[in-house]
Image (cartoon, rainbow, N blue to C red; front, side, top):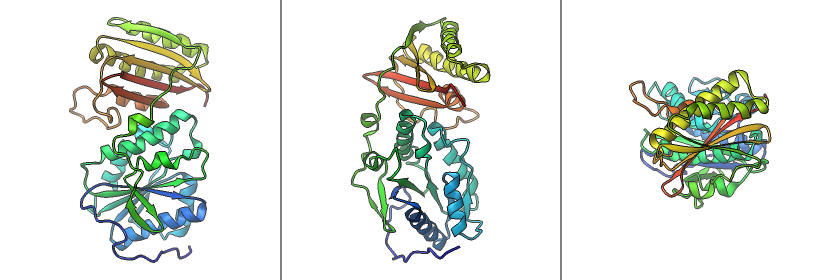
Length: 322
């Protein structure tokens, strides 16, 4: 272990009371990653705070090599959520609940696997997730989340990331982000149209079997079968059922293949006011509201956009290989 403890000046970071703080840390290269994250960790240790670290495995190895074994620094397993942006908010809620049990203030370090993103849609949803974090934890107990972001990465877009983060950390100091936009998510994260060729089916009450049959036909034609097809069919039934119940009684299903993924898109005229729908784990006593949550658990990616003007669009992605 080498000594990377930075010089710190009291008052480097703004006092924001009990608010959740979401900080972007742009960096380039291994040394910059370590300098920024270790400085953040040492600040936490000086303040008797716990630290939850959720980063790709190779970054875990880098940090472990520089830190002593400390009970207040916890590394969590991100394998089950690394490529599933819709599962990350619930994961952070679980990690915080588990590791804040001793009553200490908590800091988090969360870096997504940007360089391993399988598609533009996954990159888009990872950015959207970063914006949604501000909504999810707006009323939570105080904690801080540092998001390291490699600006040399193949999917890097610092301007888009700055719009998602209220604060920016540079040279060991945190300051308000001038690029942050609290209401911009739908404007810069819109989904494009379907790929040609695509199949289309209009459905209504009594047509769920036809929806499943159409998806099965497209899936089997492209090599998706067995458990993966059954999972997609369950998710599709939930989403189509929501259209019938809450979206005006009818909807439109479109299916197509984009590179190595089968995509099932559902559209209806309904409006989902809560952008966090499906991303928060349902309570045991909750009535309804489980369909979108289930879809996030069963599919490789779920995209949802809903406005009063355009209605609701939900896309279910299922990988055809791997």
